[in-house]
Image 1 (tube, rainbow, N blue to C red):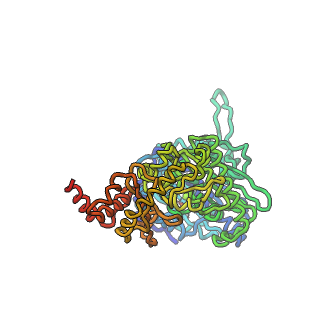
Image 2 (tube, protein in one colour):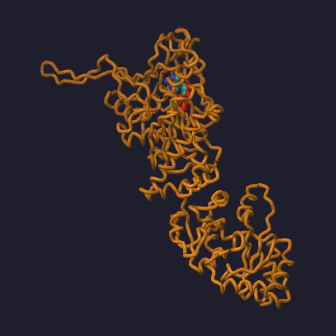
Image 3 (cartoon, rainbow, N blue to C red):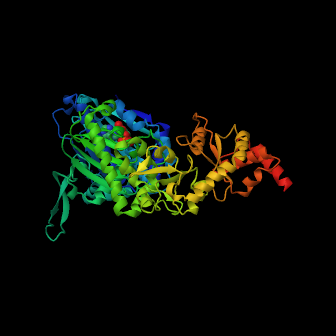
Length: 628
Ligand code: ADP
Ligand code: MG
């Protein structure tokens, strides 16, 4: 191929502008990006080499070399990884295959720190070279191709780039940065080393630089550092998770976390372990401090990368953790899995099952540890991820009890999300035999629900729940530590021993005395209510709706309907308060049917629902108002 000039895809040109303009205040990241590409290229060679050892061309030691030339003002990053063919150079360095670019551009916030994190996430890393360079030359040969099929790519980072064929004996890639005048600070061993140790220490390949030596000055001349021809390894060259815990600082863990998660903040918690036994693996897992935007998308990518014996296998290995722990980031490195493991195989592997169980336990202990020892962090965690954790009740039966202990709620007596089931149990009234809770669309609705009236009156705490998953999740938790959970909006309230004999008797009498009214109400509301009965659960309200034990609550039914799902028609039970003046007036009134309808619709409104026929409701109420 003779020299050709090609244009960048329009998006690349646009992106280049953005990258160089938005990231100039954090120029160091160019080296991180280029070293990470070199490392990716070596990973790819390792992976392809599994089935085709010839690709190694008898040079099995993979490495990255970073050097500079002061006089020419260049920095060169060379790897002996997979390399680029001519076509690949044009495609990978001239177009952006990933559709993520537009997203990237949309997400640029103008906040340089954030933008710098984003750049790697969207695979625009290579172009960050143009932050410090006004020209980049890439020379490469793909492993396995003849020496005559090398390629030189070069560009000034504006509208176009050039490609031509070259001879290149070594496989792999050299990226040569021709530095801008104001970037000459990078022509310095110490500077480059410090960037490498900050960002690239954990890269599992050796990164080599030329050794420097102090040379004494002669004849009164001052001494100086000179670069020798000897190469030395300047990074730890061991994947972070393969190193001993005691040799790793929290800062190093944090930096690693930031790189794999694209988060600009450190993680809330870190766990790092080697597990030995029938399955062997290393886990390095993090709990982020903030939830991603798409946390509630259960199909979303998982955050754990899978390695097998240090060879990178895949990102987002969903099989390694249950879905409800999808917010966890990190790495699992297995010693047992075959290197050619596929996603399908992962689902079935027994080793993976063991890893998954082990990782789940680890994550739960991390959270338990926060709960026990770092209340502030725990409440940050719970704010961000509490709702997702609840999904675990339905998903992970083996750990249900551990999960239940981690849940926290607001209650009728405590305004912060801080009441655990155990706290609740510890303050239960004498004679109380259930943990009471109510679910509603919002906490405000739960708090002012008429169903709570009798509990307030008797000073019994009720847990208030308004997360979308609550009702579904609690279906899977019939009891906590031997005490049943009871929704106060389901079934008839049975306060058991909390209700004294007089009250029980009063209710029975009311039921009997009230029977004719109840029968008439039943008849008037037969299309809407499954039953009408008298209750003692109400103090200030005339009526409320409850569903029968085992039925879906009206809120859940509403929620599912809004989400477009088919729901079985559940008729609620109308419970009326025989002590209430409105209810007492019913019997003698001349518009009984209208009042019955109003009573029902108001009970629906009180729990956040809407009357079936709002206009009719308004008409009926207005008629009443006119009379008054
Ligand atoms: P990403 O690394 O996220 O894919 P980059 O912009 O950093 O995005 O790199 C673009 C592409 O260029 C890479 O996907 C890879 O195909 C190719 N590339 C970059 N650097 C190298 C390298 N040193 N060796 C081989 N290919 C490379
Ligand atoms: Mg990259």
